[in-house]
Length: 388
Image (cartoon, rainbow, N blue to C red; front, side, top):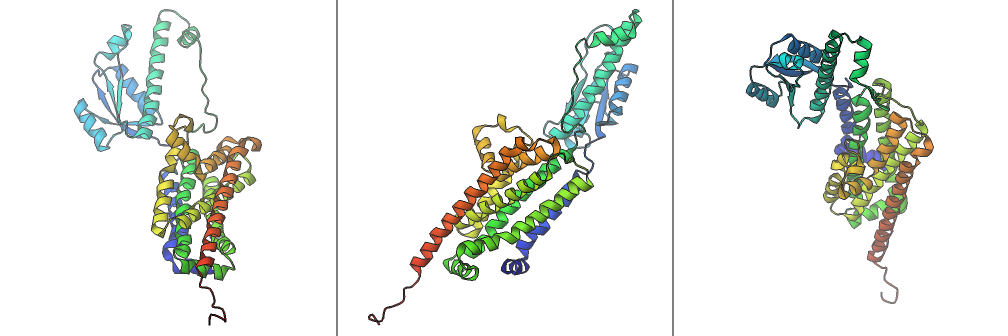
């Protein structure tokens, strides 16, 4: 009850633990609600003006990724439009394109895009490559059939060793199943660690407050358990609400074991709470603990192996990610949502989370015991009757 009353009095802490994650969840859900970026505008510089170049433009415009919206007169204009953000790429069709193609030469169809916008650039590039390859294959088949070769033979000779590519776990390339499924826990990790450091730090920053906490809770360990538990339930509620929106509203895949997913989520929250509590007990003042907690967890999304594989990271990034609960929780989460991994193969990240809870909780209990002994030794001793 004391912590619930404290939340009502500390509006900042209440907003940090409830309002901020819910607003972020709503914002991210709105941003990624489309699931996949489509019809991204591009410009075209057609220096050939032939029926072949127009066929390529129509093929590119027909792809779901790109929309040909802006014809440009030269490269300088196209470069300026890309930099301004009016278009995301520029397709340049060279002079004498048709003549060189039918003469057996290989003219270059060039696509310019901003490499700083990796997501949009790579999405459009995928669509342009597919469209140009389709037009090229059609021309080759037409040339072969014009020489009397049967259509099926001409098509077979274009790819004598066909390659079939299948996306196993996210075939629609939806950002809901990929980014939204991982960004919310990554943001929640920052909030849990910093809010735990802040709430605990307020009660342990000075010996007087620590004595009050011990007296009200019947001991430091019971008091700390009672202080952490309401926030655990609160964060479980927030995580559960985000999963309801993700799986129920957006229809993200949930192919694995739900009980294991809930268990991993509980361990994740507890590990983050004990990490924040440990920072608050070791670092003073409270502002320092909160700052270190945010510094430790804020850049963690880049080290969790979501956008870049951890096996390819350098040692610094790899081990930074390894000490954070979110890394292991996202492994278990992706296994039990997108991949549908059997339970026995997902035990490694769950056991890592359990080990983190035990280590952080054990260190927290050890620091609390040291603080208890110091408080007892620092307490004034009653005078004896003889001394009186």
